[in-house]
Length: 280
Image (cartoon, rainbow, N blue to C red; front, side, top):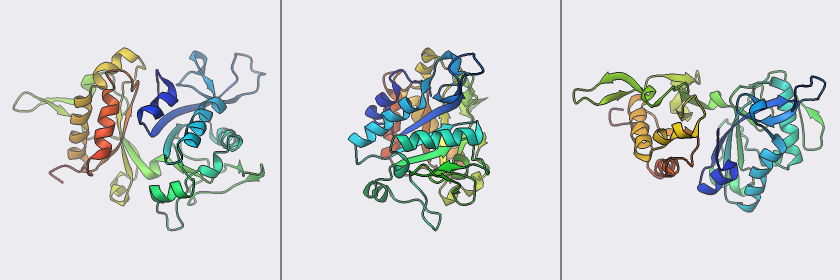
């Protein structure tokens, strides 16, 4: 996600979840240049960062904060080539041994268990997993270890087997409403559009609800209204009323824009009891 203060700034501000877009990129327009893994938002030619540098920030921060767990939502559309490159980068940085895996019964370990075992990185792949994917173990040997038969390398998890999200194609602030109004003249929140996660009906089993709360145009000035604290809180509560579920993730752009309203709303959401709405 576009950030003004980078991922380190987000972690220091209290965020424990990051969304990162990854692509295989050659760094120039020469087709003979080998492609390597980069973090960038859409078009890498507009600006990118080597994936090693990107993830080293998280690795170093976790080393300095042994009691913290971080969740990474990774958008990585390039299939097996990217999976192998990503696993290699994480291995070089000493992060593969920290990847959280599900238990034999399919349940997640508790936060305490993750911290005690030093498995403090949860990786969700938003583009899914390549059933033919191979990867490397910590000794550099090629392997093909699957997660619950879903085609993910060991320690990687298919995001939308474990979560579902709301519409992310928001053109402007008014896009969060249906265009209708209540009898009091108040706009009606749009809470009925589930975008990804075909196991939405299985939400009672523990799937996370991700509320996408950003506009399609990655422009900092446009985030001023979206990141207003009370606006986010109102939308979270409306979404929970409409979907009868707890909002676990508030996904936002430019979190530092708008007086840190996004930070305050996220802290509020983390502290309160599970949602679900009065009508559920």
